[in-house]
Length: 547
Image (cartoon, rainbow, N blue to C red; front, side, top):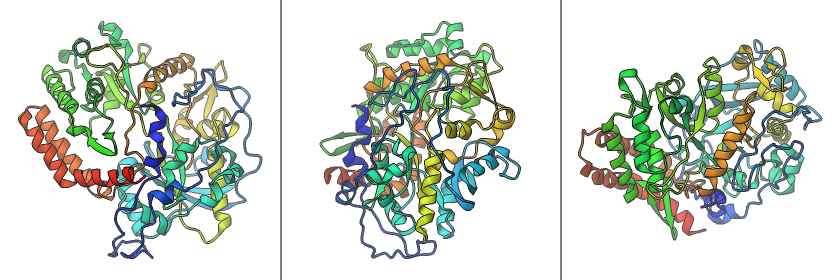
């Protein structure tokens, strides 16, 4: 299935309104239980998406592809063109809220990078920075408290936000008149976001935010290549048997070393190897959850065998396990993680001269052919604007987002990520920025979740990394299959999936660890179906079939 399937128009624009807002305490002002649903397939398919105009001010060393391989740069361009001739603001105060994966940095009064950003934007930007684990709760209390910031990150797709279409219509701004068609050309950096990505922000017959684009590859299967080489393990196991041999070669509990740290890592490898669908499989408008397939049962059988063989860390089932730290320490040798994690692994291991990062391809169980890769959804989140009485405020927010979406290689992008030379970064012999300790602390303000440029592959001071990652994406993306429900909205998914999926996975973990028999898997699947899985399926299918 090609990458374009990830953004199939009927799926991404077909999010039907499935439920009404509660009228009890904490409900949305102005929304009654009798509100007419407007988030229909017909309305959403009628939305004119923003015109795409690619930025051509810099040329990559390795070009991207229409299927989704990211353009790659071995070094940062020496000439950094400006895309913003004027400051977006004239001294206004603007607020935003987004999640953060790092320690919260100092505010602009003690953070010269942030103060410099505000100067460049011409505004006083304040940010509520919420740890990722707490974001859903903070989002709910912020909405219930009726005190929204100007810009608010929505964790999509299939977010656990009940009645999302009604929430957007009641409390956030339809940006269609500013962004549809050629209107977006007033914001050229936003026009550099591919049109397909904007489909993720379409609800209620309008465009309800700025999507934050991400690469089609989704995740990498990372290897500690230095450990593979040291212990003679195959870096490209082309069958189940070869994978088993590799896992055993990398495991020695007496030396506190295992192949995998968490269950999801072999799950992903084995799932792709066995031909499992990417969450759901669609056939003629009908959906089958991955849990319901024979390929899933084979994967569970394989996981049982791997757990028994001891190639997973003893804490593989703990949700709090520090899997990144274990990988960096060499305690484990394989790690499935987001493609953007490459940079962090490199930074975390600069002091280790033996550290060598690699990527493991995914092959079918016995044919020797590449397996179908599970593609990512192509975006991270959507930045929604609260409803404003002043239309000029909306234009200001769009100008700010346009600045923040400046493409790789531009002056605005460079400052946003690396700040000021000598304070936030130094330059290597090739002119690539290396963050200082102060820069690492101060530049993590999560403005990238308000707006961002389409991603590229670039690792400062490590030109060969661009070739490695580009080659891996070129290998895997053409085989990719998408989750056919990406961009659809199920209210039952939003309200129940967290609970029913946890119950399913808890039971699955018991089976894999031998605490419950394998034949209990059918009972788990049936419970998932009757507890909400079948309803979720039906809500998704209604949108697919009515498009």
